[in-house]
Length: 454
Ligand SMILES: [Zn+2]
Image (cartoon, rainbow, N blue to C red; front, side, top):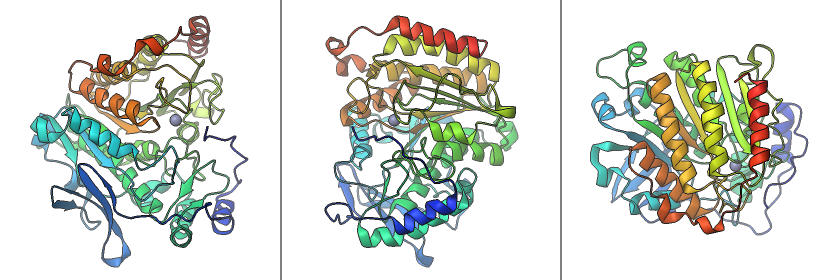
């Protein structure tokens, strides 16, 4: 297992900087980061712009499409006509330079997903206007990130990049096993920027409508930010558990600030507790955070009695599932907890921390979700967004460390967004499943329903 017990985190952002500057050490074997990660189907590389600012560029079939920081963010959103014809819009931010050999959160993850999407013909190349891939998106600004994280942490990480260039790779002490390379800062801004641009895309989705009017339009495409590093463990003061910036939390604040969407409903079905998102909104009555996770898994937070604080009391719901919980447990949770909770909250947008490490084949946990479970979640969450908030919904990739189960579960989620049948029967092997702990599952669901008056 690669997750370790989380040591006490420094009590101030200043301390985080101290650790970053003075407690760096070389990884056992010096790793030279190749900036041009290559994989079948495309080539990703960070590109240096004038003024020292880097920009993300992806070259496909020889034609490079790149972005620049000098243009307004609305220029990155596809035309309203394109948006209204699409059922799914996604962005890929693979962070090819952010990698550590043998680490489960590796730069193999996104290429594996992209390959599966291509193999299963779930790309715009095959599907035309039904699916949009955003090639062009602006990295998040430091101000965007500072809506969730301490500015001192953000700027300290940027400064630590020089050190990372010399060392090849650094560990940020006190952050759980979170590493950084010379490209981590910029690639983390790109990841958060992809999420923000997808929020723009699913909100601004009718020709000639104002932002306020577009809030009432129905049936925009579902957004999916296929990004890394993941975000839901990153706490306001620093990185944690493979996560650098809280991509979803940043997008939630952005949706409120820029689009005037007041109420945000967050569903986090990663196998680990989304403690960073939990902490960011613990006092906030306008952002509902609902997390299902495996009881006792990293980082150990997310007990049923953690329900929010002050004005935010009641707008955090934690549901730790016993090990071995699978499709039956999650379907029951969806019907009996997630749906009534969302209906009562009346959100303006739904954001999803989509971790695929609850899959039975995942090496980091022991739930028994299957590809079919993820299809069910994607399909039901899409319908929930349609019923409650005009279909406005963006998924954010979190965990998922078995490359096969990760990539096929994401691909089957795409099938759900497109309203097509699940391909899970081709991937899932029922013979490896064992009985779910149904009594324990029922007990925890009843307890949560009682605590939250559902
Ligand atoms: Zn996870």
